[in-house]
Amino acid sequence: MTAYPVYDEQAAQAQPPAYTPSQRPTPSSTFNANTDHFQAGNAGPAPAPAKQPSAFNRKFHSITSKAGWPLNKAANVIGAEGWWPTSMEKECSKAARILHSFTSLGAPQPPRADGPMHPTGITKKSMVKIPDAVLRECAGLAIFNVIRAGAFHGSLAAGSGVVVARRADGTWSPPSSFVVSTVGAGFMLGLDVYDCVCVLNTPAQVGAFTNPRVSLGGEASIAVGPVGTGGSVDAALSKTVRPMWSYMKSRGLWAGVQIDGTIIVSRGDANSVFYNERGITAKKILRGDVAWPVQARPLFEVLRAIEGRPDVDHTVVQEVGRMATPGDTVLDEKRGETQVQVEHREREDETLLDEKERLARAGY
Image (cartoon, rainbow, N blue to C red; front, side, top):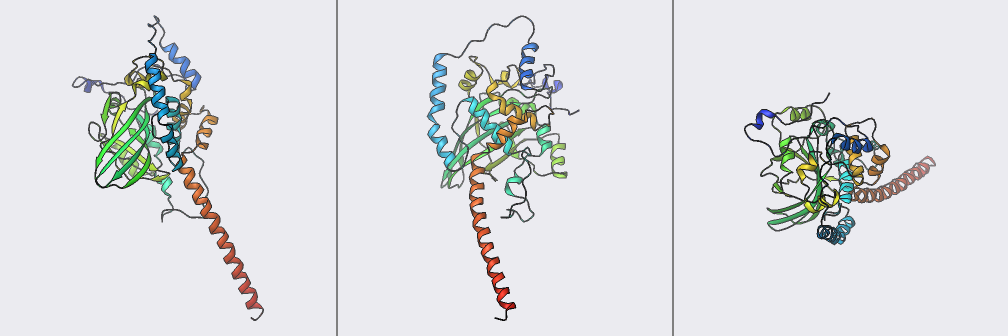
């Protein structure tokens, strides 16, 4: 049985953590049973009903979510996921697609005639797959995308995403929403959008995301995550002290960029509206003290699928896989057009060679 990262009570005496996994009994892994179990796990005196979000909060959330539609549409045009914060339902759907694209859930693709992008036969897309062992042993996942713009010696970045935590019983908490911002130094010229998955290896790293604000690389150390299979991954997982691991890609291609200095800010308004509870905290969500909303089911099923659960709703997972990130689709379309041109030239060359051989046999 897999031993999941849990909080060490002895270490708590020195410095009590801001977050510890919830200790509820293990629920069924199906979505409906998970929701029903949450209600059963809270048996006892009925708690006071939570205050619903104020009308102003709902209105503010609606306006800010819709304001970024043109910007997200522009990102889709260049082949990237939208980055402006939207409703939690859309954020969860986006997170499901991004996470799916970083895993081995998709069916293996047959070799393509246009050849690999790497001399060893490894394509850039396969180089950003997160090893299954890393996903099985993590304490949480932060899934987001950012747009980066730079000129001369400065750069800016902004984006949005969600974070989920693994509870002590191995099940996943519902998602908590956040926004991303970065102001960096160093030479960078251009504009691009990156998809990112941060693997949180310890409950303390998950706890950092329960704060209103956290700086990656500052309060929380981060490094590029291991890839591939075999000894390198095993060695990384065997270390007793592990930083957060980041996996990034840009429009389907591996992106070797650092995210040090990235600021994560909790979206209290989005969480409040999504869970219909005024003032709900990221800590309460990540402890699993609320039920999974049905609007987050695509992410729920993808999270269970990466663990190999036997009762995964494969229909939902397959639908997520069909809605690949726009960047991958654009790249495939371009490469598909190139492949048609290559095949056409190859057919012309073969016809010319056949004609030369026929003339040679005829004595010309």
